[in-house]
Length: 70
Ligand SMILES: [Zn+2]
Image 1 (cartoon, helix red, strand yellow):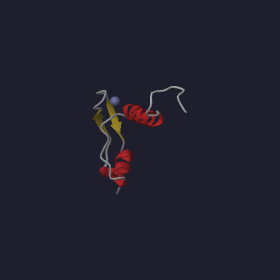
Image 2 (image 1 turned 60 degrees about the vertical axis):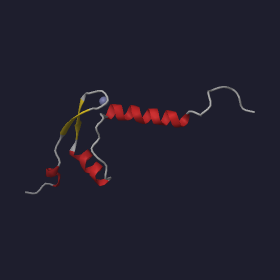
Image 3 (image 1 turned 45 degrees about the vertical axis):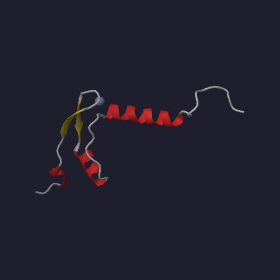
Image 4 (image 1 turned 90 degrees about the vertical axis):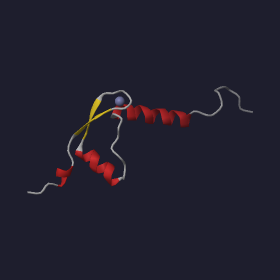
């Protein structure tokens, strides 16, 4: 019997940001490998928050808000 996913197992990783344990699925490992990424070390929740923060930073104009457009 051969199983494509035997190389991957469910991993429990401790998030570096909040310290909670989260599961890395074999699918995620395969996906990371196919993208040549390393296994994430932050839980999905923290990753989402980071993403949202980045997007906010990009969306926020450099100048302090105001109605100052001449
Ligand atoms: Zn976390």
